[in-house]
Image (cartoon, rainbow, N blue to C red; front, side, top):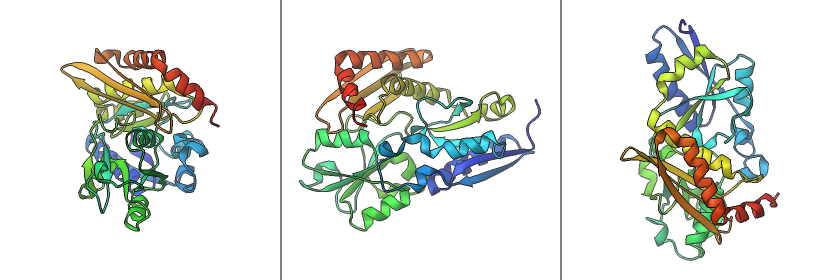
Length: 311
């Protein structure tokens, strides 16, 4: 199968999304020296609607729909996504063909005034766009005020710098990738804030059945990261309610074993069920489903049932 002469990458136009696309562009260009690798920048509905939480406007799929249309119409061959933004069930006709090596998957505490969550005084305003982070903060720091924070990374940092928030919680990976590591006051441990499924990893989406492009992107796949992310996504899929669910899922390969931790919580953080499993990395999705079953058996089912009636 001959390599294509031109490879078009569909990407959102936010600075972070473009960094991700340029990163993949560079790798594909070096792997396919004869090919022209270009980026098709697009604005998605998720980028346009900034006045409401994601959970109210249709969830993470809003960030990738336009990119998928471009692939369907033949204007692009592939799309690059932050894995935590990819819906747990892929739309029909599309596949995740590669998951690249992970950047730091943890959450970052960002503030101009304070060095960590424990320093925040009662009534301090913390911004986040994530129900997962909101539930964790409400559970551990009930004295804080949690406010929704939408927009791209630069917009969020501007809101913090303008004094709208005392601190914000962001994915460390995005800040590191954009050269903003010095904005991070503290990287939260998984024990403090269990990451979202797929956080820190990039995924390559293709039209299902595009064998030529699947062969082109195959070298970008990092086997260890892919096992971890597949386990996390299987956990999330098995627990998916009809509304957005405050849920964490984080796997590492530890002494040759896949170690998956997860939790489900109510949005107010008053109810939380957490657990972990270990097993063969090759059983990644089965381990995700196993942990989901264990969490349901220990009370996650009741939490999900309540969340299902929230919309």
